[in-house]
Structures are given as C-alpha cells and as structure tokens.
Image (cartoon, rainbow, N blue to C red):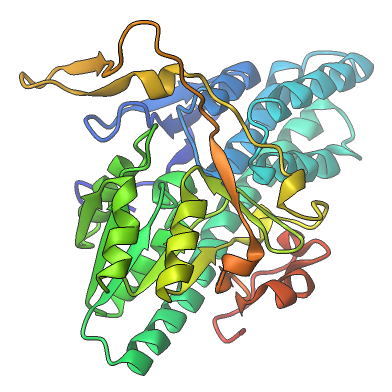
Length: 377
C-alpha cells in the first residue's frame, strides 16, 4: 500500500539477497524505518517484541526466518544442518503463541524442506516457499476484499445508506499483513469502487494499534476518526455504526474468534444494538484443530505495556510516560475470544460464511489450495 504516495510491502527480501527488510512498527506512526533482519533469532525477536505484528505478517515473517536459518547453517553437514534447523524452527514457533499463522507457515516450510537434496537445496526451497507464502497472502487478501466489499454493498443497498460507517478494532490492515490487509482489504476495495465510507477506529489499548490503522487509512485516502475503546457501544446505540468488521489471530473450528483484547465487548454491544458483526478471516488464520475458543492459548504480555504509554511530547520528541502511581500492578492479556454465536458472518477469500458453513468451506487444508476467483460465495 501507499506511504507518502509510494507503494510498499511490509516485508521483503533485501537487495543483498541475503537478509530481510521489514517496516519497524515500533516507530510508527511517527517515523517510517525499515529494519534489516539477518538471522532467524533476530526474526524471532522481531516477532516476539512486536517490531512487526498481525497474524498474516507473523506467518510470512516466520517463513522468511526459516529461510534465514537455512542460510546460517548451509555450511554444516546434512545431519548437523537438520538438527540446527529443528532448533531454529522451535525458536521461531515459540515467539508468539496465539497467532496460528506462525505455526501454519513453519509447517509449510517443513513440508517444502522435507526432501531437500542438501543444505544448498534447502536454502533455495525455503526462499521459494517464503516468497509463495508472502505472495499468497496478497492474493488471499485481495479476494477477501472483493467478497467483503460485495457484502457491504448489499447491506448498503438493503438499508438505503448514502454512506457506510464501519467500526473496527485493532489493526487488521496492510501493516498486519504483507499487503492490503484483511479488514482494510474490504475498505480499500470499497474506496476503489467509489462507495462513500467512514471508519470509526478504536484506539485499542494498551498497544494503541488504532494509531496504525488511522495512519494507514489516511495514507490511503479512507476517511476515519479515532475513538476511545469504550466509545463503541455509545456509537452503536446512537445508530452511528452500520457494521463492525474486525480481524482474527485464530478462529477455532466452531467459529469462536481470538482477536485483540476488547473485541468481545464490541461483539456484545453489536448484538445488543442489532449491528452486524463480521470477522475478516483469511484461511491461514482458521484452525480446524482447535475445537472451540476455550482451547486457544491466550498470550499474556508485559504489564509495562499497560502501565506506560509511548507517544510524542509537545516538543515533538518521543516520550514514554505512566499515568499510574508507583507500585501499580497491571494484568495484560493480549487477546480475548468472541463466541461464534455473536458473529454474523466470516469474510474469507472463498466467500462469506456463517459458523455452520465455515469448517466445510475452509477445511481440511484450504491454505494450500488455489485462491478462487471473485465469483465464489
């Protein structure tokens, strides 16, 4: 997508052909900087410490991390190479527990490397697979965006809306994927079709990913307004939200959705006010091995993320401040689970489904299948 009018992906192979460049999201929205990652442990750190974030992007980053590991160990004997690579995969897989895309991408890399002839062949295969995963993410998001835009246009016609007002939570945007995003793929497609649109952007404490959503929507010409997380119910009750559209880090077989903490409250408010609640769900984020949301591991992050807030001071410098008294304690789950009964539908690259149709549409392993054209429903 666009940054100051220039097209970018969030992650790419560097010009040296031996490292990976990614947008360091810790610097956004105040500065755009690309970080160079040269080793699998550096990639694991980037994933764990949220230099990058978003389930699809985490999957692509892990795939590139596997390629970097192959490069690091290329000079080893085949047996030592295999042992070192197994350890590298374990390091990458442990970086973040909730996003299923990480495990999915590494499983694809394991399958691609299973019959490699030698370490050099493994390097070539790993790069090809990482590239396929990254390009596949872009194709998945584009198809998801088309189906989502079709859905929104139908809702608009049914209700006779001049303008569509969407509420979203967290950043399920281009920055959370390789390109286009999941939620934002729908919004960008609507903008390209000329549909009048306004987006209510939750700030999404404690990491304030809403600042990223607002920044990228503004960069790409989508009108938006940032609101405090607790404003959503008020807006819905006043009739100022036409639909809620959120992303997902993992969706269980029964349709329960793990997403950024606070999503569940939006679903409850939407149900109480008769507002449709949709989930943008690319197939790699669907986990048929998880029976329901209770089985999804929920990441607990550092209390420091709650107790301190990073921003710009009045002089324009970076600052980290705490609004709490010394000795205050904080609990910081990164995600919550929204039960399938609260979800109106799931927007996927294969069409829009309810919870009953989801498993049949995306199982057993749709991530390895071709992306269908826009006619699917």
